[in-house]
Length: 103
Image 1 (cartoon, rainbow, N blue to C red):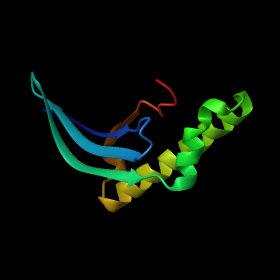
Image 2: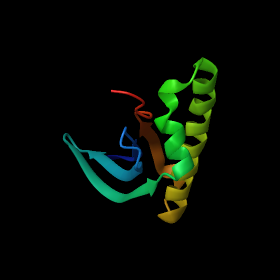
Image 3: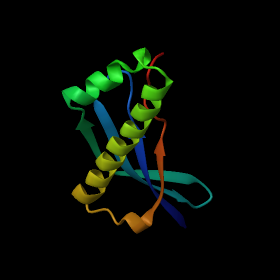
């Protein structure tokens, strides 16, 4: 049976935090999944302001914010991996849709 460990990220325009899930997918002529760990990492007020104001930024500020969001997201994922003692070598992929700025 093939198994794939995945970390999935979900954030949205509610700006409350980053939801992270550790899921194992397996395949034996049919796909199965098991949710192993989940956690929501709440955003602090500074991060929320940054995200809330993103539609007001020029292209240079958006590029800088894009980098900042990537760093913050990576820090949350690393904390999640440490918190739940996940063997990072077993993770096949990390999936993120990015941060919703406007609908």
